[in-house]
Length: 593
Ligand SMILES: *[C@@H]1O[C@H](CO)[C@@H](O)[C@H](O)[C@H]1NC(C)=O
Ligand SMILES: *[C@@H]1O[C@H](CO)[C@@H](O)[C@H](O)[C@H]1NC(C)=O
Ligand SMILES: *[C@@H]1O[C@H](CO)[C@@H](O)[C@H](O)[C@H]1NC(C)=O
Ligand SMILES: *[C@@H]1O[C@H](CO)[C@@H](O)[C@H](O)[C@H]1NC(C)=O
Ligand SMILES: *[C@@H]1O[C@H](CO)[C@@H](O)[C@H](O)[C@H]1NC(C)=O
Ligand SMILES: *[C@@H]1O[C@H](CO)[C@@H](O)[C@H](O)[C@H]1NC(C)=O
Ligand SMILES: *[C@@H]1O[C@H](CO)[C@@H](O)[C@H](O)[C@H]1NC(C)=O
Ligand SMILES: *[C@@H]1O[C@H](CO)[C@@H](O)[C@H](O)[C@H]1NC(C)=O
Ligand SMILES: *[C@@H]1O[C@H](CO)[C@@H](O)[C@H](O)[C@H]1NC(C)=O
Ligand SMILES: *[C@@H]1O[C@H](CO)[C@@H](O)[C@H](O)[C@H]1NC(C)=O
Ligand SMILES: *[C@@H]1O[C@H](CO)[C@@H](O)[C@H](O)[C@H]1NC(C)=O
Image (cartoon, rainbow, N blue to C red; front, side):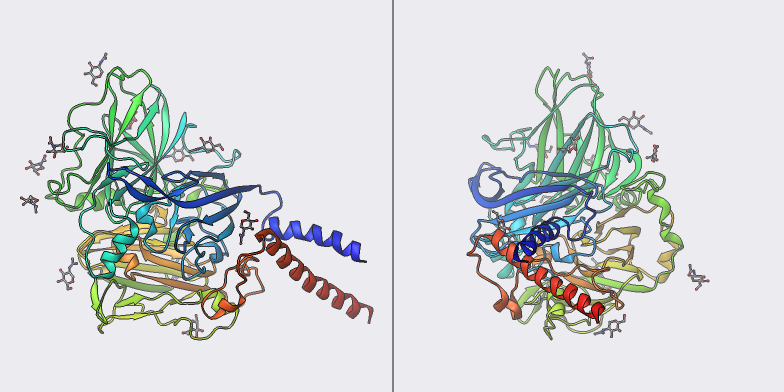
């Protein structure tokens, strides 16, 4: 009996560990990501940055649709860490989302293993730390999901696949920056822009000596898929490649209708794939530029990233002035029109053989409307805080669904207002009590003075409208109800609004936030708690993972990380198995009676 039990145990153990909730046929991709401090000088000034596996930026994770991704995150920092995967939908498992409302932080010197399936997804994403302002020091990298071989791409297979992270950068580290915010100060102008963790090529004498720049090596005549992610803090960057056309092909998991751009604005947290043909003659190298947008160009000149596109037959270095950014200082409709020109290719297959356009969002009736308004940071209880609808979010000490599972009362409130209210701003643990399978319209109003990006975890949404001025019910007449692109991060211009539609079919607690790191840090976020009232036991939402971390009111459940963690998992498995055997046993006895 004992030996039988052991055999059964080993069998189920493998099942639990590797295939609790997936199709056995879907492969596993295992990663070890080791977060530590290193010293680097991307802008010529030595500073502490967060490396992943010793590299800054971290390695790109490259998986295929439906893979089960297992990432063991080792926290070698001196403070707690959580890693989030924006745009990865984490179906039915907000337990793996890596934000404070869903996960307890990974304490310094501990490790924690994320496991999720990239179900029915393709596209370009990134990972980054979500707490303590750490993204400002690094810890980020690309995350791409390639299509299965059986699903064809809506373009010829590119000759190469290049991932580029761009972002504004300070020579102060994340601790100094958050100390400024804690003291109620603005961060001020960034010190530069990094491209793949490197500073600008010395395109003129305004760039100091001794800065290492990034070089992209290409062959003439070939076409590359260049994926660009803005992992920065708060600056929208205009991306362009001298003398080359950017054919926009994908954004955050959906193929776009392919169109040519000479440059594109990439807001904080956004990702794009461009098809770029090396159709120049290689007389010289070319500039790759990411420059600050919606700021005074002459004052923000230093906030410019420059890399080099190097043809294998190139005869000389790049020289002369950088290619111009859009000149739209007298035309604020340019940027909105560009954003709305990004359309879904409705006939392309995404991750599945059926076309992306088969979900006819335009003919579905909206069941709930939320208007979320942001304003410039305000003083609340003597602290400078940022708000949505007058509420500056305070993270629950016990993550939302963990509190629900263990019946911890009062961890959070479900009273987030659907509309901006005429009352003084407050700090609160207010969540949106959203309805499972509702089809909702969210209008994001930006009364702040800076362009914002807004992200929703666990979902892609349709960006149906965007404009300056007040949103009114009549604005609905301008919505794109046919081929709006689905994505997970959208810009909202100051003095304007953006409207999105989303079908709430992914149960869990999902973060809605400003991606601008300063605003997020100051509380401009909330969560949508989306629960199936008829939950049939784990069909709509997975139970907490076996390695779930406990904190807050449940901290007493947390074992110190002293036994080797593989033992810990095995013990978990054994406990689960015991309860399963008990159930089987009871059922058998019942049947015998
Ligand atoms: C920590 O890492 C070890 C391997 O280095 C792994 O076996 C263990 O499962 C990890 N712990 C957690 C809680 O994920
Ligand atoms: C990702 O992997 C695929 C093969 O699965 C490969 O074709 C592609 O070049 C890789 N992309 C990157 C950026 O490494
Ligand atoms: C360097 O180039 C930038 C823009 O391309 C320009 O604004 C600036 O005046 C130039 N600086 C010098 C010193 O040439
Ligand atoms: C788009 O750019 C490509 C070069 O990358 C060019 O071959 C094509 O003709 C352009 N299409 C349009 C409509 O301009
Ligand atoms: C290469 O192209 C540039 C501009 O596009 C042109 O000025 C130059 O003459 C060309 N060189 C050769 C060798 O064709
Ligand atoms: C941009 O900054 C320059 C230099 O400070 C200033 O002279 C100019 O008026 C500013 N332009 C705008 C549009 O604010
Ligand atoms: C931008 O366009 C305006 C006209 O709309 C023109 O007056 C101005 O000189 C242009 N600026 C640059 C830098 O080209
Ligand atoms: C849309 O996708 C189809 C593949 O289904 C492709 O043949 C077509 O070129 C794409 N159209 C555009 C405009 O991107
Ligand atoms: C949407 O609402 C309209 C009017 O309220 C109604 O006539 C229509 O049947 C509804 N459509 C669906 C798909 O429920
Ligand atoms: C949340 O919404 C559901 C209906 O969708 C309602 O039954 C429940 O009472 C609400 N909870 C709170 C705390 O408002
Ligand atoms: C913010 O709202 C006020 C009042 O509606 C309005 O006067 C102001 O122009 C708005 N500012 C921005 C940047 O939207």
